[in-house]
Image 1 (cartoon, helix red, strand yellow):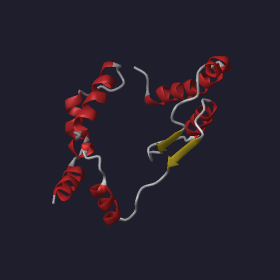
Image 2 (cartoon, one colour):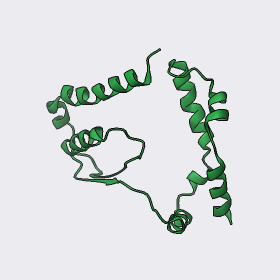
Image 3 (cartoon, one colour):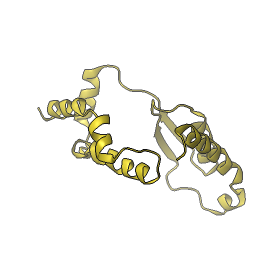
Image 4 (tube, helix red, strand yellow):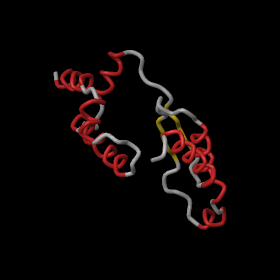
Length: 140
């Protein structure tokens, strides 16, 4: 089994290697994208933001002209709650985050990257109280 550090090291090498190995003539043969604007979210979990700059450069070379990166969260709770209530997309309220954890935990367990079973990981490593309280407040 490989360690997390080895996995991340391999992942950081794979990103630039892909950029260097890509062929410009193949990209030039494709038509420009229909949508030239992208909005990306920067997560606070990132250890290194270098892949973001590589991705931005790659996307611009593919024909995307306007790339926006959302780098923050609302600091005011009332403002964030008002924004979430006003969203037309209510699907996220029905989405079960436990299913997401279970999906990725199964894959990581099969790959040998984690030893715990998905059920044990969910039972010991998750706390849904915040989301449950938020769902209650949004229903009111």
